[in-house]
Image 1 (tube, rainbow, N blue to C red):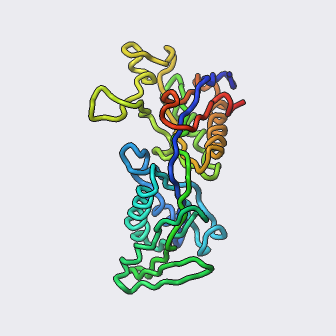
Image 2 (cartoon, rainbow, N blue to C red):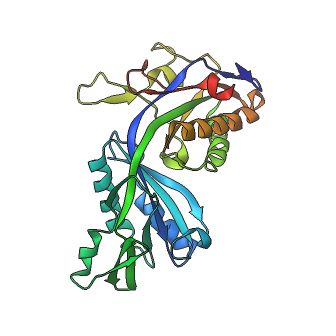
Image 3 (cartoon, one colour):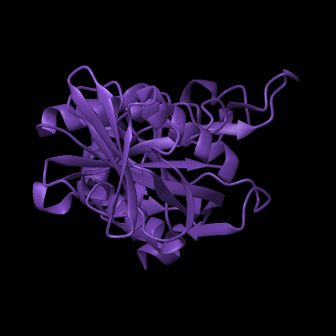
Amino acid sequence: MIINGVTIDKTFAEAFPMKATRAIITAQNEKWAMISAQAMTGFATSVIACGCEAGIERVLSPDETPDGRPGVAIMIYAIGGKGLAKQLETRAGQCVLTSPTSALFAGIEGGKPIPLGKNLRYFGDGFQIAKKIGGKRYWRVPVMDGEFLTEATTGMVDAVGGGNFLVLAESQPQALAACEAAIEEMRKIPNVIMPFPGGVVRSGSKVGSKYASLGASTNDAFCPTLKGVTKTDLSPEIESVMEIVIDGLSKEDIDKAMRVGIQAVCDLGAANGIKRISAGNYGGKLGPFHFHLQEIMA
């Protein structure tokens, strides 16, 4: 398959089951809602070392938020429910409770309830007050700028992590420009996040390492500087490879995000140095969700 001069490899991205939740952060203005959201989703690129994968889903207008203020929807993904609940609560306490004018609400209806502000209320030292509105429990916690309003719980649902595709280009600037174009379009798709910095990862990994203490190491088959010393998957003209990883609430959500992202890369085409689109997989042994590139782009 070739789209605008870009070869789409006959391969698939391999993804695995995760647990996910969404939270809504509001504040006095969009600036402070975004600051809080960025803090809450920091150091959350990969479950390999971060404990969770998190990112900003989208900005919300006042008519989309529970308290009628500007907001930001964030999503957090983890391998298991216990780990997800811990990450959510820790991050909310350190990054939203602390952030000026912030409030915190559930972003998923249904699923299994997990604590959002249920335990953060104890920061109020006995001065906190519970309110039940429309069947939902909220906590008002006194803080120095006024009060912190938080919903008690949010929902946890089954999700998919690790959808991905690789952009192979003639130069580093061309690979990055293509990934930036892809991320711009992918961020329009609901129910997905791209957890790496700016949505892009340059240090794609493989399972295992020559060092026993490491569970993952550089994907040498796609490293341009190693063409002459390893079993490479790169032709001579490829000098840069970058990866986009996607987590989503369903396989269909990731399908949509991959489709628009790959199309955005192909729109730039071979004339802009883009040569191939590929994907990372482990022979089907890592996870049950397989995203076949040519089927997605058919």
